[in-house]
Picture 1 (cartoon, rainbow, N blue to C red):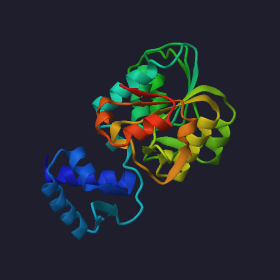
Picture 2: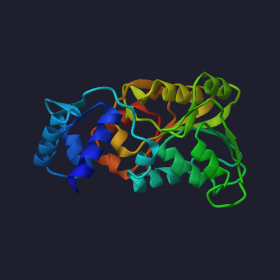
Picture 3: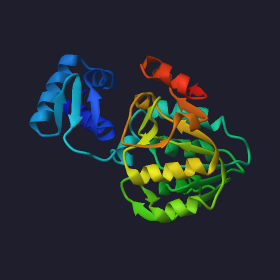
Picture 4: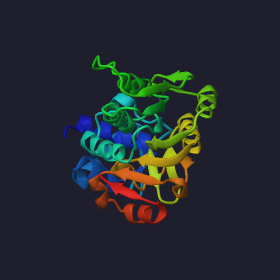
Length: 258
């Protein structure tokens, strides 16, 4: 892996979690501890981070990486999660999808179904479900929530969006967090994104969290769903290597490993 790519991956980890351990970076980048140590020294000299015992912290609060960046990270794992999540759905259900890279891939799987009603704040998800990318006729009803547009996430947000969410009741909310922690629950970095996910969870009979292995055991800034309120977590097979899995199994009603 080239140094530039490693730097980007480390920046993305810090943007998502604010603090990361050396062990976490070694595992995510599949490089040696010595390589990570050199990279952290270089990034610290550039003012990107501050080294602390066992890892590094961001020098200031940064938002999550843009959606376009997240869409190309851990694609295989996210596809497996999407396939497992769609298997939990029943014909004719109404579902909420928030904006995220994993839910975007899930939308492609839902597009192959018929008779579903999908309510989302994601412009890209709405277009996928409408068949705009393939020129096909949509087989599901899609409702795009209004509000202010966030270009970075390609989604709507704000008080108007939250008010619209409260007009609906859904069978399932399928949400993709920044981090999922046994004690702190499903979390977002941005308050306005957490507000959307929290409202969707509150208006649904069931809450299903889609989180790849890198998010398990991680905490971010804002909690939007307690583990006690999560009906199922869908994650990928690499989660078996994560130290946060045992605690998550105890805290959550159901953990599905794709």
